[in-house]
Picture 1 (cartoon, rainbow, N blue to C red):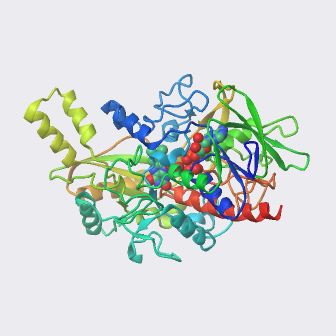
Picture 2: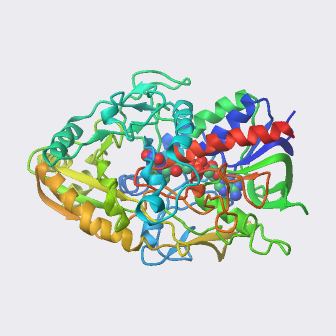
Picture 3: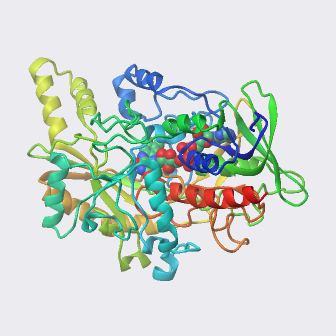
Length: 546
Ligand SMILES: Cc1cc2nc3c(=O)[nH]c(=O)nc-3n(C[C@H](O)[C@H](O)[C@H](O)COP(=O)(O)OP(=O)(O)OC[C@H]3O[C@@H](n4cnc5c(N)ncnc54)[C@H](O)[C@@H]3O)c2cc1C
């Protein structure tokens, strides 16, 4: 029996990782209490918020329809001014760590694109194979069953032809066939082939042709970011409705701020504030922080006390270090003939083979993808700025929308102790320190972009018929938050073990992106989900044993 003050398993965070774990616990017969910092808002309200946003704001920020609550702030538009930004970024590539998660019930999958890549075996063994970065404490074959389980729990559509799978080592086929390419993406296949590369369909967390988990098939709204209006795309909010139907209890507006431990280093309780700053102590057998790669290390650091001065789970001093993402640059291509992006989901394919190779001992690889957003919004804004009206306005919007392409190139970054999350002096309304991140993508990425990925991107764009290709300077965040509670076998140099259990606290689990020892170049949430499923096996075993 679950009460508001305790359960067998207490989970902070209702994003994809927290939800995958919660459902597995309920299926194992354990009681589950989920504490969520943000408010609970239904899909209709979010879509309405989006509709009511001014066009320029729609184009600028996927967080727009999710106004932050003062007790659960999250990043909005970044100003670079520490007094204004929630997440304070600094360092040579501060812009490349301007993350865009939301603290709402359901978390960041509300506005994710739903692209699902796996890591390759080489991505997990960078040090052994290329002498850089860190190795995972297990190999791809050990992670593969969890990838498959995560794909089935989410509902993944991907190619059945192994020649189009990334990577092709799979124990089960995808449950749904890959989405067909629209016209622009079909041109990418031909262009890549003409320069000796392969443009492959990405697996997607959305229903193709079939209904799954009560969610309908995708109808191509091209509105995945900031939210799928019909829930064809997996989001954790849909999963929560199922979790509650199975008996899980979700407490919104519950900001976890302290992890309490006993003399044996077992976790005794989570403490949360409600919006009035009333504190509640929540007890359980096993505790999970699934608050994402920024908020999880933040809570661990906030929980420091006289006996544990460096913070919870931090005897290695690695909490908050090794912050990673997949730093990306954009290349803007102007085509003579229409290419027409925007049919179907926002990302449908990529060149992935450019992320692999022996060059990785010297510089980073990357994935290259023609973004499949409809460009009509930004084309319209640009045409209005020129004060065009009538037929001229219509023609300019059509031409720009059809003949402009944005190519995104995402790179693997190496874990570095200097890329670090700390607690800033700035506090939110509850008196909790806001997070700060120092970030430098490093020469490994800079060289990879200059020597490897941009020259290929230019060739690819030209093969697509581009008359002009402009690399937009600098790197941007790709919204894949990794590294802050890094995994390893050695408790002296890592925070969690192979099941995402804190080395220092046997009943505390820190699953998800923050545990990843390497980033790879592909979107990483599927790996976070697989780690969640793996941790869930361990949590169920240990909690059932008592
Ligand atoms: C615009 C955008 C597009 C993206 N597209 C893709 C993509 O195509 N493919 C891909 O792989 N990834 C993508 N991502 C990344 C993906 O959304 C995240 O990696 C993923 O959602 C992380 O899941 P999570 O459960 O770890 O964290 P979250 O989804 O961030 O969930 C964490 C939860 O914890 C809650 N929380 C935080 N602090 C506290 C606290 N103190 N107390 C209680 N609760 C707390 C939060 O409110 C939140 O609900 C995208 C991200 C963005 C922003």
